[in-house]
Amino acid sequence: RKEVEQDPGPFNVPEGATVAFNCTYSNSASQSFFWYRQDCRKEPKLLMSVYSSGNEDGRFTAQLNRASQYISLLIRDSKLSDSATYLCVVMGLRGYQKVTFGTGTKLQVIP
Amino acid sequence: DGGITQSPKYLFRKEGQNVTLSCEQNLNHDAMYWYRQDPGQGLRLIYYSQIVNDFQKGDIAEGYSVSREKKESFPLTVTSAQKNPTAFYLCASSINGGGTGAYNEQFFGPGTRLTVL
Image (cartoon, rainbow over all chains, first blue to last red; front, side, top):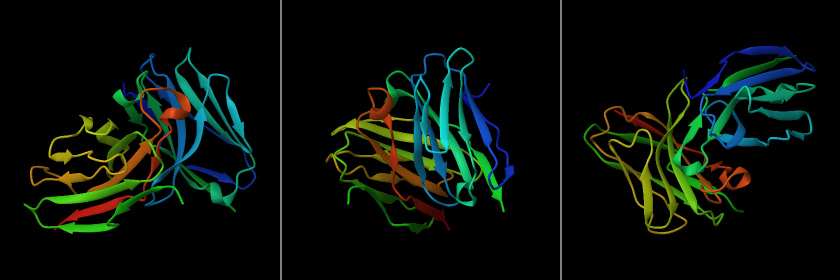
């Protein structure tokens, strides 16, 4: 089992739709979780951290489920500009010791 | 403006040559990281540094070397021992790497695309 797994997609959704991605992780001791967005041939950019209580930033909601060992990202009212690859990142208790990126989920928002 | 810079943006190397990729940050972050990304693959950690004059190997350190003589700078040398150096190289920094949550949020530079001819 991979340490961090994501469905590569692509997820093709119409503008205005709601879409959700999951990311599963294998190390139950993982402590820090993040979602990044990466546009084609660009660097990843931090979208949001994922906290145990869940967090929301505008149209984006991230949640953590420790019991089932996954994090999720929900995008509401999808925009064309949301088209990108979404990477999940999982870090160990002492973050610098283990940083694992998922391979990403590609989202394509269609007019 | 605070941020991370990498240079050059594109780099071409002949086989057998060593090349050094630059990474500078003015965010006053303690931790810095180097990753490589290959097409269709996730980022893989090459080296990381928690503090000046200290660095640790990541998952794929063979054929690479780093230094951390200044807080702001973390250059990566791709040596001739690296068998498949053609990739997209990304440098990142975080406040530190020993805490949780926001302290581990990594911010990336624009990357260097290295091609071996």
